[in-house]
Image (cartoon, rainbow, N blue to C red; front, top):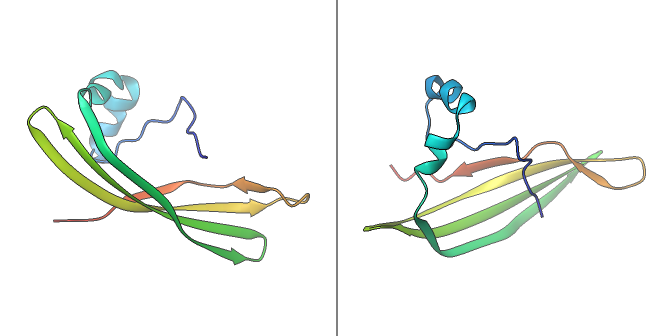
Length: 103
């Protein structure tokens, strides 16, 4: 399981100009999602590619949510490139997540 560090803040729906303000004070941005409830969450492995010295795992997710009177669903995927270390263990190099574009 991947658990982000406490210093990580995901800002998926923010333009780059707003990110500096959010980094200096993340509470107002985080408060926007308070009151949201996940009705269903489906997460699964999609595949795994092995290339010399690396393993690239891909995943998919689907979420149904509600917040007060609003409801919705979102889905997407992710890539987790890992580097194979000398002892054979895998070190996560990067975590990449995307949302499916529904516009």
